[in-house]
Image 1: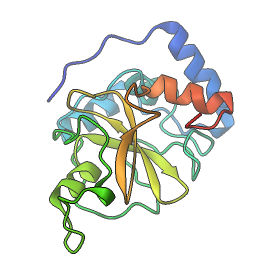
Image 2: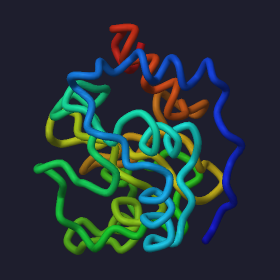
Image 3: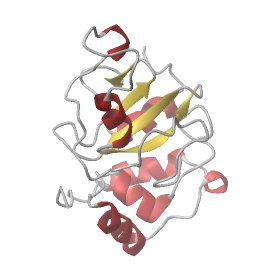
Image 4: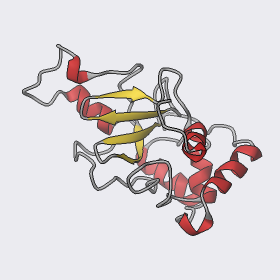
Length: 182
């Protein structure tokens, strides 16, 4: 596996995450054994507090931070997912900074650039979809592990900017009712 287990989240973090998702909207938690099995199969350890969230609180929710369909269960993909190569959450996420490939002159607009496929398929899990065209990713590998990024057909960016949110901050922002980018 590419990372060791992070320290268990603070009880205040878990209490907040528990309260942010009403029980009637939660999918059953997976339990620690099922999470460990998924991690073994995917050669990665999930970042905290997401790891404990799916093990103990909820494995997804139809009410949640992502605008289209809520929070995806671990390993699931939104219906509008682009269908690029197979998901490889244990491989290195290829970016350390935002990249707008639509405006990058080094990207061949006629052919699928393998770097773009890597952004969509490596080093992350998909948390959900926003507007059907953009997707929230939780990075599972690399120097920005544990951050939430948005990826779309034009590029990828840490959310809300270079000082990206982790899973808890992303849920807090959604729970506050404020716009994502304000």
